[in-house]
Amino acid sequence: MRVLVVEDQQRMADTLARGLRRHAMAVDVAYDGIGGLEKARSNDYDVVVLDRDLPGLHGDEVCRQLRQAQVGSRIIMVTAASTVDDLVTGLDLGADDYLAKPFELAELLARLRALGRRSPNVSPAVLRFGDVELDPAAMAVSRAGRPISLTPREHAVLAVLLRAGGQLVSAEDLFEQAWDDRADPFTASVRVIVSRLRSKLGDPPLIETVVTRGYRLVEPGT
Image (tube, rainbow, N blue to C red):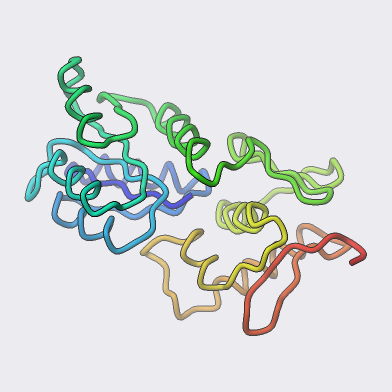
């Protein structure tokens, strides 16, 4: 899942980003409304976590412009105010959910996963292909019942491939969905992570490289 956090309190924004990245999410950050609007229009985010009281451009206006531009990202509006009127205003502007400060990271994670299940391309709670299972909520991966320890990035890449269900995924799409804007697109990051995944998943091989085109999962023996 790729997420944009728009929050003017830099320490809070960075803390949220680190917490979400530990749960295999690719997270970009903006510290004001203008930067948040620009990033949300320029990138394909699954969810935008949008603080309401932003400098530069108010969160309400960011939300309104994103919906006017028909940006498909889900929006969680975040605010210190939690009255019914605030909730109604945020939802009427096009927000999909509303979160009052202060909140715990666990609650934000649960809401992000819930919005993911409401997306047009709904993913099951547990992703499966062949004898491999991945539980995004528990950050747990197994093959033929054998637990496999993955880094958050490896977990994110495997999740993209599992959601594709055997369809080809280009290296560019993998990078877009599993990395954030801190990553260097000119490195061999995708190839390295896929190589590590192959090694950890073991035999028979599960990930096939289609030269110059990308990667896909294949049933063992095919």
